[in-house]
Length: 179
Image (cartoon, rainbow, N blue to C red; front, side, top):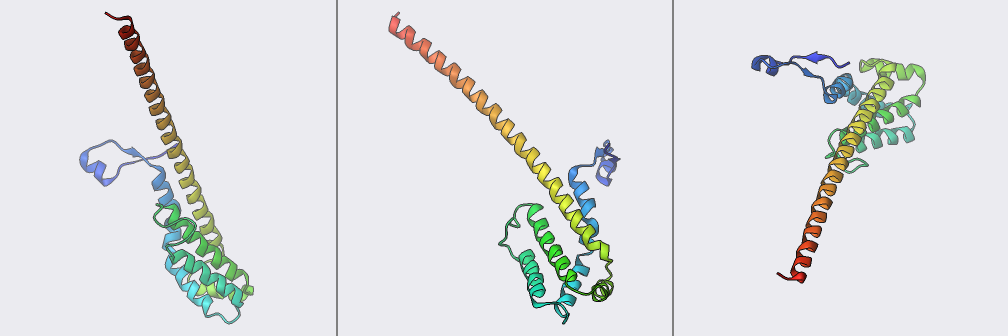
């Protein structure tokens, strides 16, 4: 069951509380991830300078960073929400891949240096994937609603055309019969 919240705007206007929407759920889901973005940025820099990290993993790390900063990617940034989340997910996967190539002691040292726990990265990947799932479900719902609306409009249009055709046929018959 959804909880009811009274925001400052509703309080000031004396309005009834509104139900929490799916957008606020996504915001709550992603808040910890977004709060850790500066730490992830420092981790990218730290891993880039790590001599034990293989060049292939450094290239993958830079590829993830470039993908997340580039406007040209699989889901463009102008697609609200999804475009930004796929960039974030690419960066998090690149970080996880780079960390996996390091010995445990080195990996833990890098994470501790930026204030992260080893489980946070996997948790944040799960959070971003969950948010993408919620956005996808909402997109499907919106798409279905649009299709239903379009079908209703098409049905109404066909009925009107049908009525117009019937009316036109009657008028033609009356004209053929004469006055």
